[in-house]
Image (tube, rainbow, N blue to C red; front, side, top):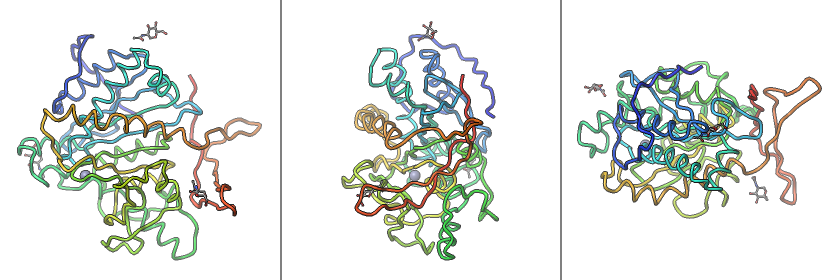
Length: 360
Ligand SMILES: *[C@@H]1O[C@H](CO)[C@@H](O)[C@H](O)[C@H]1NC(C)=O
Ligand SMILES: *[C@@H]1O[C@H](CO)[C@@H](O)[C@H](O)[C@H]1NC(C)=O
Ligand SMILES: *[C@@H]1O[C@H](CO)[C@@H](O)[C@H](O)[C@H]1NC(C)=O
Ligand SMILES: [Zn+2]
């Protein structure tokens, strides 16, 4: 599924992570250094397609079974730098990879438990070409480098599954999950970065995800699109609204329904929710899209605990396997009913079991 990587860098084993803006050549070196320090719990891979300018989209996986999905181990991902000029997430994810590895090796019980029970995938840069353009322009422009090299905003380029599910709602059809097969036409051609991330999302049974942006200070959750599709700000609740808006995800200020903030079409967050089992939220890490190098470490200390606590959220709720006499059942549909209130309340967004189990 993924291209095998042949990274021929000379890596010193004692390499120490540095807080700086890592360019597109340095990024895979950092990942490879983490892998050298933690070979048993990491794997570096590239998505199936590179960027427009042919930069591979590198991911580092942290788990005690690199390369394999295991029952009861939720799959979590973080995606950084989807907007090329929003660069903090990229550095935070490189720092997070290094931190998890270091703490694992230091026998940090909390981090060891996290890695033994979770499969974590970090994609620091979904839009390396935009990063380059933005950086070459000095990094301080509000728009330069936001889009990919075809001038496409990748966070508007996903198939608009909201429109499909809202149309089903109007017709009284309750079908709002795994909707990719219901796409009959695309508003715009898929960009290579979008396609690569879509294949990644469809091939690993992710349950939790966040995309790291910058330019504001807010966390938002599905739906991102208004029910009318109009570019207005109106609350657009998903069937899991109680979960997204509950204290589990945060009732502090600065957490909002996506469309209540502003409506957008073709975003990655709602695509996760409507095409896969993954709950994704969008994190706007701060008003400065391209912080100064000297501030990166301070930003890390501000965000570190939240980034780790969010991964633990993958262990909220129920996990298990669906079997019959012949073994695991793939693609079994699971309907959930909330029975904590006075009246049982179905959560009308089914999830499915994974399509494969590989146990090594
Ligand atoms: C990796 O695992 C092997 C086998 O369990 C062990 O001998 C080795 O020390 C581990 N390496 C690291 C860096 O933890
Ligand atoms: C595409 O990349 C090239 C090389 O980095 C750059 O000169 C050009 O401005 C980019 N175009 C767009 C639309 O980003
Ligand atoms: C379940 O229902 C209770 C009572 O109505 C509500 O407070 C809670 O948020 C719901 N939880 C979920 C996950 O829907
Ligand atoms: Zn953004």
